[in-house]
Length: 516
Image (cartoon, rainbow, N blue to C red):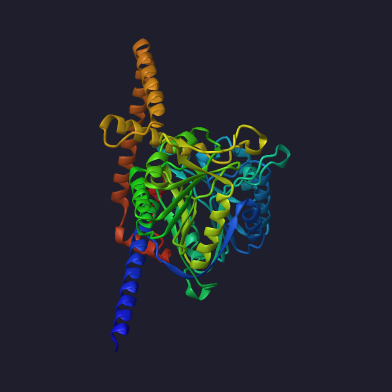
């Protein structure tokens, strides 16, 4: 064998070895295997997502599993309700999970009663409980739909007219992204739904959960279904790993960006190493404070060479990433701690050149309707030539999402800035000065109230401490008594293993789902 042939063989073996190591790293970070044999269809905005969902619902023969953070009680919400009830009346088992906090102010009890009366099995994730004072911090932020174990949808869209727009008021649709999945990985999506469903009531029948089967291959796309759970930080690990491994391009889209120090450092390091890192975020938002909170983190990224863009349309709600023309992510996880640590989320990571190319083309089209944020001569963050979003009805906002997760993300951003001010652990940005002043004024107001009306602060504090202590005692006694009644951990684990044919992450116990 010639020297050239030996060198080619060594380089090929080294490349394959690195690829195997990268695959192993992703599998461990995501807690999900790479599954081949799938077909994936990219769906842009409600105009492509909603019709695909409704067609799949109308074609259902056995069962429908629908998990959505919010279903608005508006024209779109009722359209989906009617579609689900129609299938339920034909004998299809229809199951729906919605988030309690996400539905507050968006959907009435009568809407859910109407669905139940029509034969739809409806369950609510994490409603308020006396034994869980801080339970509201954990939300089911997923948006998934599966039908008959044959087709699954994973997306950033909730159900509501904000995503279709309001033409009579000249309000454009929200910009969002989803995918349709067919093939073996649909089983992974259904098993993620089953763990949540089982955790808040009677479990699903085994025959109504798709089984992983390579004979169901529909294409040549390899992907991972990544179900995140509270306190797991699964997608944070994946997002950081992607930022570390990207060699040429890393293009991100996020609706409520509030990156942690660790993630910001990963993006900065990639940009300084020559990677084309771009971040596209909304300019207008359904929660006005989000823009200020996001901009508070711009300067460290811009200083490192990360390119930042703000969407000029009504609202950018997509949560996507594409790297090096080979890797892409679509799902419900935002780049903030509320999504990474606090919520149930679900994303699909696709490793396919053809799909990644579609994602890159879509990203470039989105940039055509965006304004790049830069540092001016005085190193101030500015958007040259940015349109005035308050000038016309084109960008009028309606609330399409729940404020709970974004409020948590905002609180985290503020707490990070306040913590940095006290500990001097990082350099604070000028834009964070406004946050410091606001927090300082708030604390000063509370101090004055406490001085003038001490009972006004002491009574709520005593109530909260008493509530928390009683809840902890109740939960502790309950778990302790369950431990004595439980026959065998190994027996339960074996029974759970029979329910799952393809690994999709750490199992969720019933107690954990009820109150993560």
